[in-house]
Amino acid sequence: MNTNRSDTYCKGKTKKGRPCRAAAMDGGLCFFHANPDKATELGRIGGSQNRHSFTGLVDPARDLRTARGVLEECARLIENIYTGKIPPKVATCIGPLLSLQMRVIQVADLEARIAKLEQGQGSRGQNANDAADKGVLERENEPRNGPGIG
Image (tube, rainbow, N blue to C red; front, side, top):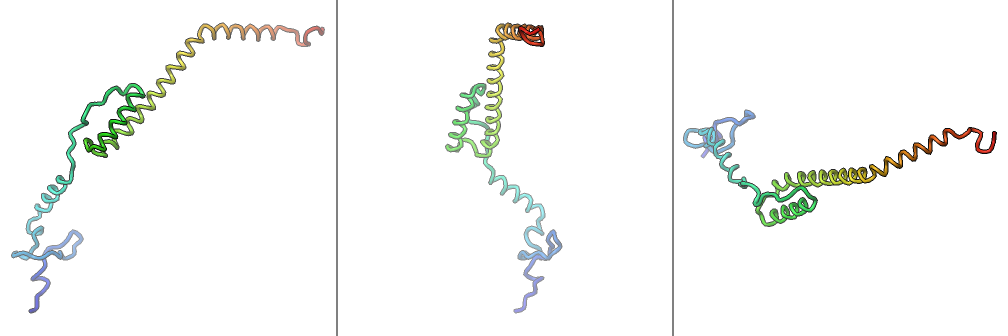
């Protein structure tokens, strides 16, 4: 029994122009060359089965305006990943945002503390500046030869 390649293999060509190596059906073509739209359709179905549907966070974020609130949200995020309530890819997006929020809170806190210190020293600072300026003026008015010489 001598069978040719043309009898057992598909007569279609691959994208690279090589002969298709799939088994031929009755018409001389493989299933996918006989039904070119089926490959796309089946690929789409297979891809959608591999996806994990995610509708949103289990609970909305609480107060993220304080460092304590961001810390609690981080702990809740980790817990939700371990329990499978949210996929790790979502946490990968939320993690840097929480980090950014923490840095913004720290900078805002420092700015508030500096403003408070400046405000507290406002009246005392003005008096200190006046006294310093007065001391400089007094030294400038002293004779250059020094005291007692002259």
